[in-house]
Image (tube, rainbow, N blue to C red):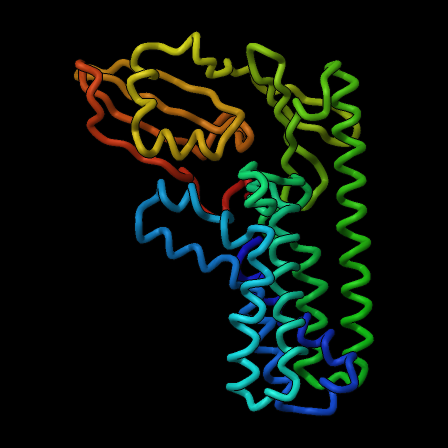
Amino acid sequence: MDTGSHLLFGVTLAGLAIANPVVAAHPELQHAVLAATLIGSHAPDFDSVMRLRGPSAYIRHHRGLTHSLPAPFLWAPLLGLPIAWLFGAQAWSGTVVLWTLIAVCFHIVLDLFNAYGVQCLRPFTQKWLHLDVLSLFDPYLFAAHGTAAMLWLFGYPHAVLVFRLVYGLTAVYLAWRLAVYRSVIGKLSAKYQLEDTRITMLPTLLGASWQFVADLGDEYLTGYYRNGRVNEVACLSKAKPENLADAAKATMGADGVRAFHHFSNRIHVKVQEKVDGYLVTWSDVRFWHHHGMPFSAAVTLDRNMNVLSEHIGWNKKSWQPPFV
């Protein structure tokens, strides 16, 4: 999810920790836990430093090793122990490490519910896993946790009960969103006579509708599912190796294209002939919106099929849909 939401969840996890009488009785431990959950809630995204090595490196590594299966068990002591020492809470180092672990795990779980995906089962597999249930920013979760945090900040005497309620509702909300997703994808699978794995969906910001991509074999069908009705939008050809144009084949060795293929598996390629060469655009169909595909790798070639320039990334603002 977005950085602001992860940090907010760090605050509310610290509020939830006060349900433990030991945490509630020691201010230094409360401060240590708050620092641990705030930092732990953001720690997996420390891999954003890969932006310094360029967009291709960022695409390859973001939500990779730092979100992997062993990562929480490394982040927890690495962050929790020095935080406990810094706040004079060494006697409760185990508690601080535990809440750091919870914060890191909650971050990874929420990212798993998003459509971008995580490599959370590394080192056993480098497959990108995504449940496609939540947008990058979920207004309902943010509102609920934000309200709980504000009540705590202004001294509401029963804040601990509010935090328990909010996290209980969060679990119910995630389960409900997953159930709705399974129901909708089941209906789409029945309509198009396809296996569930050949259909991917993205939620809209408010969750009232879904956009989908169905793999029909030689092409992708895109559309919306709203109020029990399917609205088909477009069909796009699949980028099959045997059908690629020479210009598209010439870009396969470009760093950005290799990074793109490492991440994407619903791929459309478009070759445009220019006066002085070609523009080849590889697009991830999963993230289509209003006939556009904002996540892409674009390569410019000269007439001799030499790479002149390349770009990979999002061709949209962060506040524009799709919210992944």
